[in-house]
Each structure stands twice: as structure tokens, then as C-alpha cells.
Image (cartoon, rainbow over all chains, first blue to last red; front, side, top):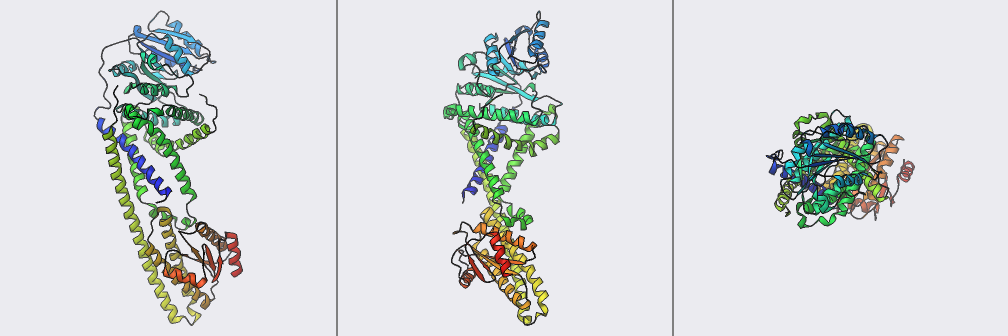
Length: 400
Length: 217
């Protein structure tokens, strides 16, 4: 058996294995993965920190939804940290502060010299009064019940963070509609990962933490490209739990053009890869499934991706010249093991996607976007995975 | 928290993947085997057609009156033989599926086709150029490329009005027919090309091949 054949078999088996792990987790928890935790009735003080840089278009809408949270107003501590915006974000937020001066909940607006999202979050953490701290993006908005939905998930002392159901805002562009499907898939996968204590990120659009966790594992990494992932890895490294909710809805504004999407994904990939490399020491049995499955899976996936890309290119280059004389027959001759495995992986992945979308019937995702996601959007990953490695190798400067 | 590794989860996922993989391998082998059966059956059909044509040439081979029948029949058969060769090569190159005995049968058919082509050429004044490519799948780094060069040269020459018939023999397969041809043309290394019974040892690119064919034609 030659190397190409061996690699093909290896990739096929790896893909099957990963898909099967997810399907088995789903089957084990299918009856209760959508269960909502019971409200404990406790209403501790919750600080909501909103770092904002040039978010003039969105900050007002964001603050309206935060102020409208279905949570006792005197238990909410809202902090806006303007990170040196140049578009009037601070002024708009200050307007809300003034209008809210004599009312609850408490809204405080600060401005500071631009230092990045991590620094703005840490600025807010230092001022926070809550037992729990929620961090959120200024271009996100919240469903009224989000805090009530998330708090009961802190049902054990070692649960240090909880993630909501981050969804894409409705009525977006076609590119945002693709991302709606993707976000549901991510959300569904994250829920399944939570069953093996392997949630790898506390999403920037909204996440809740026990305030004390920042004292124990440190605050946000101010020089990180994906600080919301880095803090989650640090929490995992301290052997604390991160829970995931399917019902606490938060809406975000994803990129609406290819250029911004590419930029965002390359940042995620570069930051993500660096973070997993930084935390590669977690690949030990004492870190459970996270250390023995999830962290290695990330390295294996990126390796598998490039092997697959290489195999595809090799298959194109090495297609014999004579194939053009028997192109019709070659379809039949080509059917075999990989066609079968490929079909199985395709069917199970599509089923998995269907389950993810079906888990959120309120989202009313159109079939055409699901199909376009399968046959077009997934292939975008070839572009940004290749670009991220290219940029990492060239040691190109990184930025938000 | 106390962490655990879900060994049973991974063991089950591995086991299920293994079963699916095994089913895939079984289906793959079944399909490959059915492809080889189909090619074998095609070889049988072509062999019958070749025998009929041989008989016809034997009976009417001293007159050129039947030449249009001979050439058109032989062209058809040659095309089928060539296509069968590509199918065998595709299975071998792309999927690693080999059946040495089937390949040897194919070489016998190629030899019959070549000999008939030679006969028709002399009997009917057919201007087709007969090219034999001797290659080795085990002992030759440039043989695959030589095969491509020959096909590309043939495509260019066809558009310039030259008609070529191609025959290929794996000289290291242990086929008695291939060995006989090697002996006849003194082939000692790979790749080697025989154009209208003249040996050109070593690698030739498509432009060299075109010149050689034009010189012969």
C-alpha cells in the first residue's frame, strides 16, 4: 500500500471516528440536551461589562436590550467601557447613562485610551460589583430572559462560566444567513461538548462568569487575538467547568461581506491555533476528555485538513492523461471504499446539521441556506485555513 | 473537579467506525471485483470479434477487395482494446487494483490486434503508424510520463492527419506475449518505443515522438 493510499484510509477513518463520537454523545443525551435548568430563585448581583470600540451604530440597541433584561434592576450593574472610540460611541453611551441616572439598573460609562478588547474587559472587571460577571460585545443584543436562563447553570461550585445560545440577528444578508446555519451548528456542537466537559470558548457576544474566577485564573489576556477562547482554556486548565445553554438567546451581528468574514476567520484560526499550542500541555489524562480528546482533536483536524488538501491537489495533478478517453467509465470505475465512506460521512454530517437546525425551530432557517451552507460555505474553510497557515508561516502582523 | 476520560465512548466510536470502514472495504472490493469481471467479459467479446476477423482474413487475405471491411472492423476492435487498456490502467493507477492474469490476457489480445493491424497494413496499404510502448510498473521512473507523452503526441498527430495505433506492454509482468515482443524488437530497458517495427530505446518526449512518426509516415 503506498503512502497516498494510506493517507486516504487514515483521513477517512479519522473523519468517521470524529463524526461518530459526536453522534454517540448526542444519542446518549438526546432526551435532555434541550432541557432548561430549574430557576433557583436566587438573584445575585450581576455585572454586565460592555467593551466598545467604534460601535456607534450598535451601542444604543445593545444598551436598550441590557436595560430591558428581565432581572431585578437593583441587582444589575452595567458597565460600558469605551475603548477610545472615534465615532461617538462614548457620547451615545453617556446619553443613556444620563437618562438612566436616577433609575435602576445602575449604568456606568467609562472611557479609556484604546488598548484592545481584553484591556477594556479587564478595566470593567476591576470596577465590577457583581458576584457574577457577564461580558458582552457592543454589537450584540440580548433576549430579556438570558440572565435568568444562565444563572441556574451555575449549580455546582466548580462551574465557573456559562455560555448562551449565540445566534445571528434576523433579516441579514445571504452571507449572514449562511452564518446563521453555522452558528446553530457551533451551538449544537458546543452543547454536546459540554457533556464531556470540553467547552473550549466563552463567546465574546455574551458569556457569564463567577467573578471569583478572574481572581483565581487571572483576567483576560490583553494580547490575545481570541481572548474569549484563551480565558476558557485557562478555566479548563484549572479544572473548572464551563456549561452551555441552548435556550438563553443572544443575537450577534456577524460579518456581512466576504472581506470582513475572511478577516474574522483568519483571526479566529490564528488565535485559536496559538492558544491550543500554548495549552498543549493539557493533553494529559488528568484533564479528562478535554485533554485526551478535544485538544488533540484540534491539532489532528488542522493536520487532516492539510493532508486532505494535499491529497486533493495530488489527485488532480496525478489524474492520468488517458482518463479523458474514458471519463464516463472512470466514474463507475472510481466508485469504491472512499465513495462509500465519503457518502457515509456526508450523510451523517448532514444529519448532524439537520439535528442542529431542528433544535432551534424558532430560527426558521430556509432550506436553500442549509443546502448552500453544505455545498458552498463549508468550502470557504479551505480559503481561510490555507491563509491562516500562510500568514503564520510568514509571521505576518496580527490585528483585530 | 475530578475529570474523567470517556474511554467507552471512544471505544464505541472506534468500533462503529471500524465496522463502517470494514463494510466500505467490502463494498469497495465487491465493486472492484465486478469491474474486473466486466472488463474480463469485454475482453471475451473482443476476442470473439478478433477471431472472426482473423478467420475472414485467412479466407480472403489474398485479395484487397475486402480491405474496407478489414480496416473498419479492425479500427473498431483496436478502439475497444485501447479503451480496455485504459480501464485496466485506471484501476491499477488510481485504486491499486491489479489482476496480473487479466492483464496477461489483455496483452494477448493486444498482440493479436497488432499482428492483424500489421497484416492489414501490408495487404491494404493502410497508412496507420503502429506504435508499441514497452514499459515497466516496477522498474521505471519515467514510464508513466512516457505513456502521457505518447498519447499527447498521438492527439497532435491525429489533428495533423496522421493515424496511429497504440499498443502497450508491461515488460516485467512475466507475460509470454510481452516477452516474445521484447525479444523480437531487442528491447532491453524501459521505456522503449517501437514505431513501425523500429526500436527507439529510452525516453522520448512528445515532440521527438511526433518527428519520429512523421519520418516513418
